[in-house]
Image 1: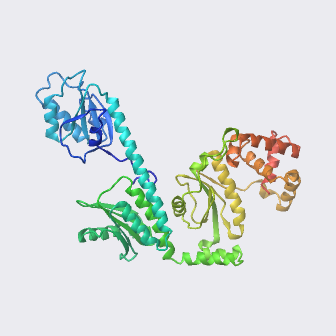
Image 2: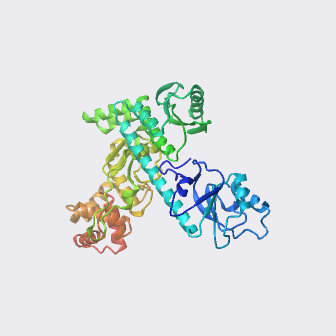
Amino acid sequence: MPDPAVPPTPAVPLAALLAREDLALRRIAGPSDPALVIHAAHTSEMSDPYPYLLGGELLLTAGVHIPAAADSGAYFDAYVSRIVAAGGAALGFGLAPVHDTVPPALVAACDRHGLPLLEVPPQTPFTAVARAVWQLLARARLAELRRVSEAQQSLAAAAARPDPVPSVLRQLAQRLGGRAALYGPEGTGIAAAGREPDPAVRDALAELTEIVRPSGPGTPTSATHATADTHLAAYALGSGFVLALATPGREPGDHTIASVAAVLLTLLTGEQHSGSGATRTAALVRLLLGGTAEEVAPLLGEGGTWFVVHACPNDLRDHPSPGPRGTARPAAGPPDIVATTALGAALGSPLIDPAGDVVQLLVPAGREPAPHPGWTLGVSAPVPAEQLPAAAAQAARALARARATRAPLVRHGTRAGLDDLVPREDAEAHARAVLGPLAEHPALAETLRTWLSLHGSWDRTAVALSVHRNTVRQRIARCARLLDAELDDPDVRMELWFALRQR
C-alpha cells in the first residue's frame, strides 16, 4: 500500500516526449496509441537488457551490441521480445556513430511485438532525452502533489461544515470523478455522492465492503477490485462503517486523497455513533462549571490513567531555533488539521489540543504511544487525572529532548533512582537551598536543567529551547556566577541535577 503522505510519481505520455521539438525524435515503428506512457529512461548496450529493466522504461541504444551478421531478423526478434517481456515501454535507437540508419529488421521486430520504436537523430544525445524525461516526470509529480494538497484542504473544509459527512463524500466524489458512498455497520448505504454506477458495479462495491468490515483478527483495512472500466475500493473506518469508491480510473494520488477522507470520516462517524462523544462533552461542561480533574476523569473512561503527549511536526523540529546572528526561524505555522487528526487516530485518542506549534494529546494508559511518521513526540509517565499538570510538564521536557537529539519519540524516565532514597520533604528543602539564587530567574533554571540533561551540549540545548547557542552560553555563565558553582565539576552537576528534579 503506498505511503498516504507521498503519492507515487505519475507516468508521462510518450506523445509528450515526441512533442519536444528540441529532441527531434521520430516514431518509426510500433503502435501510436496516445495512452502509452513511460516511467523512466535507461541507456543500455546489452544484447539482453531484460535483467536491468524494472518496467515502463524508454530504453535507449546506439546498436553497439548488434552483431555484424544480424540481418536475418532472428537476433532482433529475440532482442525486442526480451524488452517487451521485461515491461519496456519503448525503444529509442540513436543514429551515428555506429549505424547511419535504423536496421529494417529491428523496425519489423518492433512492429511485430507492438513496441514503439523512436529514431534519435545524431544531434540529440541520450542524456538530453533522459533529461527531458525527468523534466516531464517532475512536472507531472508537481501537478499531482498540487492536486493532492488542494483535495486535502477541500476535504478538511468540508468536514467543518454543518453537514460534514455528506459534504466530505461530495467533495471526495468530485475530486476523484466517481462515486463515494458510506455504508453503516449493518451493510446498508447511509449516504452517497457522485454519479450513480450501473447495478453490476453497485453490487460489486457492496460485496467489496463486506471484505473490510471487521470480522475478527486478520480482517484487511482496505480492498480494491477492477472491472473493465471501473476501479473499486473500500476502506474500513472503525465501528463497522466502510467508505466505498467507484472511479473510472486510478490516478497515483487517488489513494492519498481517499485516505485523508477515510481519516475524517472515521472521526466523524466514531464520535456520532458511540457514547464516547457524549461523555467527553459532559466532561468538558463539568470542567467549565468548576469540576475537579478527579470528578471529570471517570467520564473519559479507560480507567482514568493517562499519558500526556506533546508533538510537533518534523519541519518544526528541523528548524526550531533562530539561525546565526539571530536570523528568524522559517515560518511554519500551526500543524495541519488533517495531519493532527490523523496523529490522534494513530495514537488512539480524539482528545487533541493543537496549541500553537505543539499538539497536546491525552492518550489512555492502555495504549502505549509509538513513533509516528512526520512527527516528533514527547511522552509523559502514565498518571491519574489529578497529576495531569505535572505530566504535561514531563511531556514538554521529553519533547524538548526529542527535538534536540532528533529522536522520533522520547519518554519521561520512570526508573527508580536517588529520588526514592531521600524523603520528599528533605529533597525539596535541599533543592530550595541549592537553587535559591535562581528562584527569581525561571529562564535560567530551565536553561540549566536542559543543559545538564543534554550533557552540556550548547547546540542541542539551543535547539531544545529555541534560542541561539550564544544565549545558552550567557545563561549558563550567569547560573555559575549566581550559584557560585564550578559547573565543569561532575559532583556539582549531579547535585544541581538532583535539585532541579525536585522543582
